[in-house]
Image (cartoon, rainbow, N blue to C red):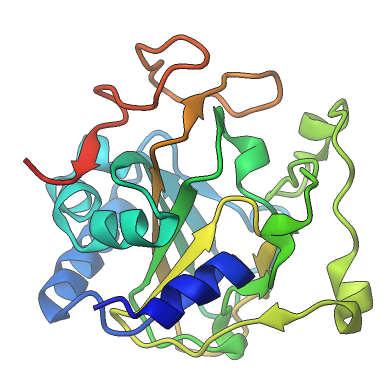
Length: 267
């Protein structure tokens, strides 16, 4: 279901939007799983908007470790095959899951950032499959991407998502990310209107962010499933965030382990 021009666009731009990859069954299962997580958040849950704006920008991670529907999405949905195809990899290992829910009236944006500088992994074949669970456009927080920025050849300092967490990365030796919003005309910024079941697939080094959700009554639920490919290696360097469980890996090892299971090809 992935066309050759999708592969070309991903390699060129670092991001592609694929339509209708997750059917109504997956949408219903994931919406129900999200509501369970909102009602009883896990230990890694947070409100990114706390102390910044009214509303709620809910985030959670590693839900697959305790919820069977998130686990099914990570391991058994179309996502692993999509990731492997677009990474150009013969295999895909699941890295982790992350949930983003911007409730109506939440002005707090997702700051411009790259993903890989946060993560204890190195390599080129690292990607995210971001599944839309609501109709999405710019008014309720569509994710924006600086096309081609995965090939800029620079790793930017991780950007705190929550107000008051700025000190976390002040000792990083990496360059501070440019003020994208102040010079939007300098960049090729892409975003897509999305329907439930569409997904974004984007490289771990692409610069991306999202505005707040100022639309009354319109939620923005997105589930991001992260995958690594053949060339990815465990890299627990200083400055990356700490996983709640330590993988049984030494630095430089391929990513496959119990915490990062092989999900493609299927057995």
